[in-house]
Image (cartoon, rainbow, N blue to C red; front, side, top):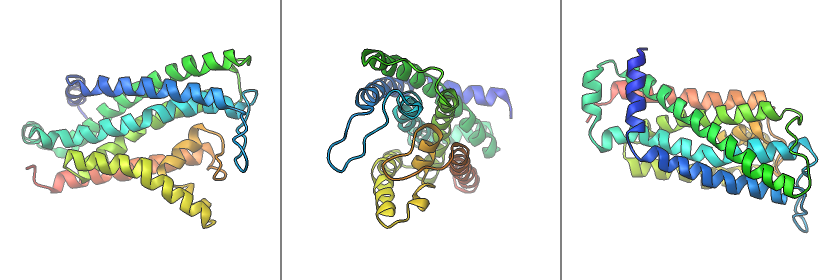
Length: 263
């Protein structure tokens, strides 16, 4: 893989206003998520609702810092991945791109690597925002920041990695569905609406063991404590599952890009 090709794909991303608009979304979403997580940690959810772990526990602090960083950034990483592929067809730049580099596999791999770099950047910014906003609320509530909490830094690192990997999922979806609006609707709709409903349905049917392998749930296993819908996979298993989804989508993207007509 030539570095120049990856650099060219990075230039494409950074030459638009979309990347920093999505970055602003990462900052806003993460700040709200982290502050709310810290504010409501340990608060009784009412009759029938579980009480979340208090800020004196490692689970709660991982949720405030790592969990909030992931939740605040992954959807924006998904969107930039989707648009990274679909924009080539929407603005009819796919033809000159593939003419300049006839081996389409190299283009898709370079595009994936470039978006991974951007995804890592989004994840790092989200982590800074989570520590800043979440940490402020933790201190206001009279607790220690807990920076030495058990498995905290591993969860933070995995949160950054998980955010980056979601760009590959976006690249795959953008290759499967060339229409940009349709691809975005499917990606966001499935992630925010369909998958949570499927997860709740599986839990209600006593099939929560299956729900552990959904992509968002596997991602949560890397960064967050168990949820109200049961235990999550071990962090390493969640990482393997998410990586498997990314590989499948990336492989589909490469396979389709080679076999489809450009226009």
